[in-house]
Length: 335
Image (cartoon, rainbow, N blue to C red; front, side, top):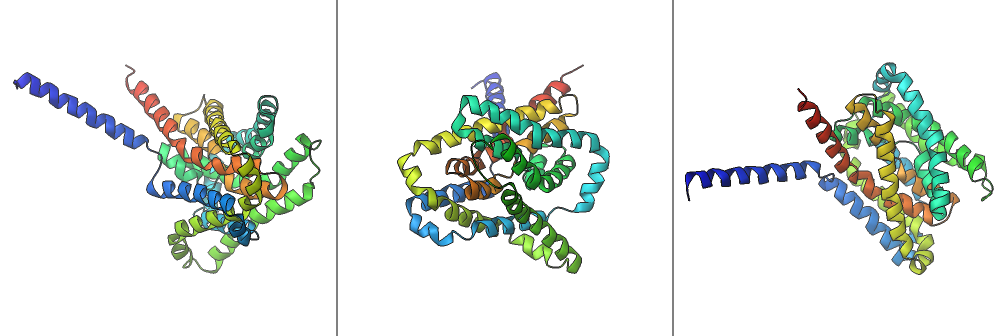
């Protein structure tokens, strides 16, 4: 081998190494995230295949989702929220109106004409609050996490009022559901954990750190119990119509793509960090709440779509990291 051939081979190895490094950096799943998706899907399957076993947990979903929110809210400091709110109040107000009122209506009617069986699923997922782990996802894609944190708190506080109102106004002709029943259920699930966390902070801070150390294994347990207690009741339907599971997955990925595009477009005149935050605030939504809420008031399709959204919930990190990489590379190449 000549010296020139050796140099070329070394360059090829370096290119391959750089390519693999880039691919690894784009991987959305940590081991914990992958384990979470496995638990969610496997617990759904167990509930559908063994509905008698799943029925043992039918009283637990609401309490498990409250416990899960309690664990998630432990990492949110309200003083950090107020600090971030001062610098982004105008953007946050406009984004919140778009997220909780305008976009859900648009998405609902798009699906109503394109895929009517999934229109209500699209409305529920689009109109629900931003997920409490969204700031962590924002950190992973280098978004404006302080902006995300504020929107998490604000949408969590407003969703118990706005989501039932949207359902009642838009889908009132198709279903007879009490507005106050929906409001009561959402308020219970969201506000009780927030109040409990604030009470705990004032009584004793010493307990917070030990509880947070057990957050992940407890969350896995709660996710499994939620799915077991929800999906057992739809076992006959899914056994008869297994294709719905595939359709629900396609709908979930389609919605995630729409959310990312709309989030980036909303902040198109702002910084790259805000564009990524916009995608995260729409794409990383509170799908677990939709699973429990929709199982109380609607049919089998809505909880299934919400459950399958757990996959794009994490997968959207890939295109967002690629978007960040492409934008920063193009900016650095400018003279």
